[in-house]
Length: 112
Image (cartoon, rainbow, N blue to C red; front, side, top):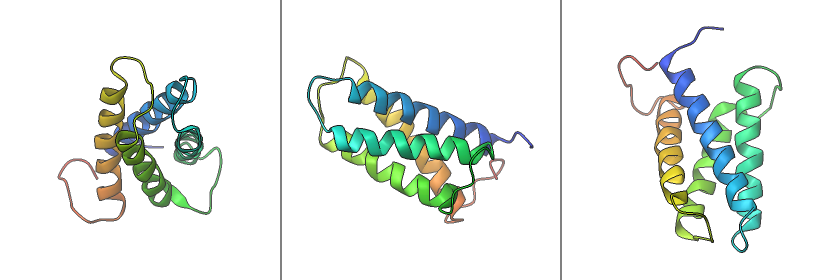
């Protein structure tokens, strides 16, 4: 396994999304279903990235699911602790980079 910049960005996106989903799931009120979808998609993305679990979806499809869940979490804000939106935005930006490079929409020099 070669460690590239895209690999590091994908790990950051998955880990932050997993952390954000757990924090939102522990909140008093909010969107529990979206938080569970976010946790499952982030965990599957991390497992598929390290080749521990082979998924029929692939990193690209899991990244799309995670992107939708992160956008919905930003729009439908629940009760998170202070700075919860910042973690969601950082995970959203990192996941957007993964999504753009996974489908080859835009070529970023030095990342692929």
